[in-house]
Image 1: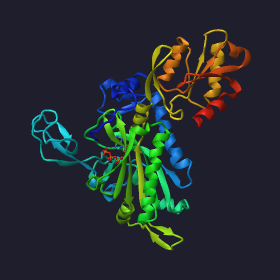
Image 2: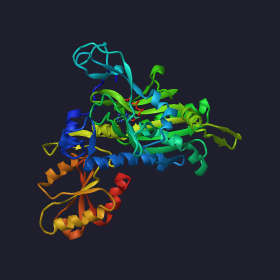
Image 3: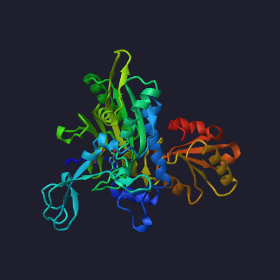
Image 4: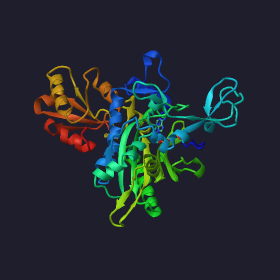
Length: 445
Ligand code: ATP
């Protein structure tokens, strides 16, 4: 994190967001009834929809809309040799120091001044602490049964490289993408869902010819592509920047990494990393498995191991950033409101349906309209309280559209369609609603 923190462009604080998330059922602390479980979180009815939409946005842009990327869903458990080959057993460590006085433990690279940040006491020498969770596969708890919960999804992709080449008629350059849970026994968890011990990742390994020009071209391409994805789905361009790692910061496998950093309320911090991994992983797995793991280049009539560019993003961390930038406070008809200005594609609920009055057949009609819409979109139905209050309840969770059934609906089968951001309303025939809303959103989901 850097010291120079320009002002953010909205009034959000972590506290405001955490309260909203809890109050409206986006994010709850895990095991709340038992007092929580250090920095783990559950996603409520709205959080799970936002999460699905963030993953959908990634999958569409990284897989579905392209011709050169394939999908994969590999297991969380991998053969233990995987982590020897990838060097996670040796290198996936954080340097830890303990305070000799208060016994608190810290990441050595996160403190300055050489004294305990809590009590000013003397610190021990740094020791390396492996971040992988260990467990046992099968009924016998001995060293032969030890397995690890994967700390990244990438290795499942490398372990399937041969399967891709043998079954999918791929030609370089091509990518393999995966979304799934990863686990890291982080020492300092912090800032809500920014850093947790259980989280989801969206990773893609893009295999290119082993050639520096080719590598440089695709590295630049993916840094730009990933930067633009975040902007496209709603991040403020001034809250996003690229940062190249210095050579002493690079991971053991990387010859170049660019972080996309986001301006959190607590300062600039990593959102996504794009790394050049070379042929490190395929070389290592070839060595440890005894398998070839090469690609046959038809044009050059040679075999080689491709090099890799990897964009890696946390789902939870991306959600945090989209929520932080969607947050806004304004005044509508002399009343203050909180509004989450989500891109409609990310909004948990796309359209809410309201009867203006709880009589005259309006509630029944509204329920019938909801039944049409919910085959295509996530919807909500609300008949409680004044219409203004109902609009504001949906604004607060970012619902982009509202459909109101009024007395005119009962005569001509039209409704009003309200826009969350402008609060403008237009009249639309019920028969055209699905099409009109789909065209505004761009997706049905
Ligand atoms: P850091 O240095 O902050 O620990 P990292 O550089 O080890 O992170 P990567 O291994 O590059 O992170 O992981 C890729 C992406 O996965 C990160 O950019 C982030 O979005 C996400 N991520 C990594 N660790 C966590 C975590 N503990 N909780 C939530 N998301 C995470």
